[in-house]
Image (cartoon, rainbow over all chains, first blue to last red; front, side, top):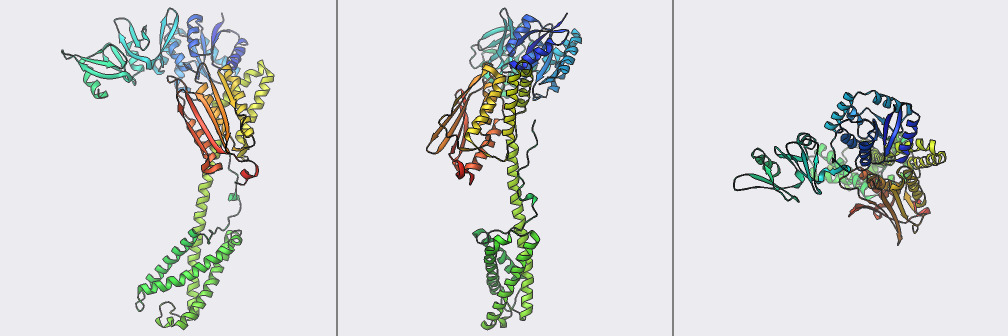
Length: 245
Length: 365
């Protein structure tokens, strides 16, 4: 059976060229094309391609971020990056993708990369996905709902809140359940978010003040967010010193 | 790809080294001469330490004598400058030295004659020896001081020339920069069109060649506005192939005088920036507007592009291009040109303003 390839590039001539090269390659077929990162993620959900040819530089959600979101799939596809100019120093992402190809792409290089992707075992793909989860910082949080993938810009997020099983993301347009654990979110956004409690991570750009109630319990107030959030005793002093609030 | 910077046109760098004399009729050079001369007088007076006459009168007399010599010398060199500056370095230097020596001999003889009559010889301070010793001493001192001064003028001139060359080289280097992304993406587009639409691929190759020719063009730093707009439109065609409907450009430049001189690559980089920063990062694309106005001899060109959404990756690096354009506009128009840029609400706006010059008027600059 042919391996199915999704082509992602914002420029139509670039997609066209990849398509015509793929048509001439035995053992592979074009599953679909996407011209933005968002559409690529949506198509991956529905088409479930084996391989994604992913342009790194795209408007909106760029290729690296698409790869990062794909890495959360239970069965992540193999990712091949394509780029016109190596401005991201893509060697840094060597372990996150099968290969990266420089445009204009030579047919034999494309075939070699596709062949390599076809040989990968599920374990190897999982390994790449976990590398991508560790090294690529997302600008959007992906929420999988009934009507497909929803993307929430990280700078609109007030806080992440963890229950027994789920993590809730509270943002300017409401709240959603996500699959990421608080720990991985804390690692991913260590520069912008701060842990205020065992179960909560808040966006430092919304920090307004810390208040204390009669019992001595500390609460954090966020700009534009109605609820006060509980601060653990251990974090309260830290928070005050770090943000002078 | 940054191609190596083209060498600026080799001016006098490759010719044999020439003598350089400043304009001795100019106030600066005369001041330099007076200072050199006073310092020499001071050295002489200090070294002589004349007991009979006293330090200050000795210094005063020596100064007067040296000022006569040096100012006459400056006058002479001022008159002969045009001729001397055309000579090779050794020949010119020898000529200057011979001229000053001859002049010193003449003035010394006159001083000796009149000094003798005025009774200065008795004091012994200024003219202590017989005529010939006096002449030889003066000539030797003059030769040494003149040689040092010549060396000084030559070195400072070389240094200034060097600074200028470096500045020019920097301008050329900046000018030569084409975004590597643009090049490779264009190549990719052409590779794709070669299969699907060979005629368009051919057009694209021709456009790309034209753009590179404009980019590599060193000699014609001044081109007409019509030519520059042409280059910018060629660039737009190239990007249009790639970005399709996402890129829209509105041109409102009909009222501009098309024969006005502009430095090459002023409008095209602005369009490039506008597309790179304002259109490419937006999934829905955007419209770039180029507006031209001609009023009271001043040309105003305004390029506007939508500002990338705040939450998208911000691209930087347009300051370099803007600084380069500003620098070249200043080189061509001096103080009368302005380059302004800034963000206004949802738009990023760059405004160029420069005087209209065309034909001979501009070429003379």
